[in-house]
View 1 (cartoon, rainbow, N blue to C red):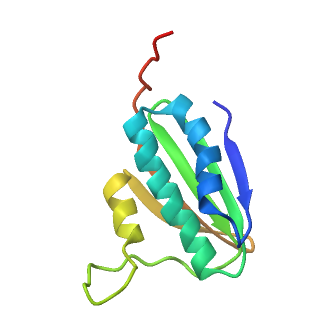
View 2 (cartoon, rainbow, N blue to C red):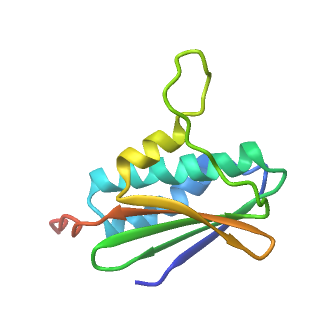
Length: 129
């Protein structure tokens, strides 16, 4: 399965990016897994859009067991997961990422960072002709 690279600008409409990702994910995952993966993608991309002055790139690649999601950007500032706090508006996205994924993390790269997440994969349901 060939990886999918989707660059995005700071002003990106996340819905359009999700639609492009959905097409690839539909071939790699079951419908429920697609929705979970799209939620993870949305959270990671929105973090870039909200917390950096730049765009980035979404990379999706799949092997037999895992969908690998990577979002790169030019900011060296690492995301931080906050504990639940009813007084804080927002800040729960990485809690959702933690709940849905097998694991997630960050790694520095030249000129910024990559935030990655691994979603367990099952074979997609075959579609009747």
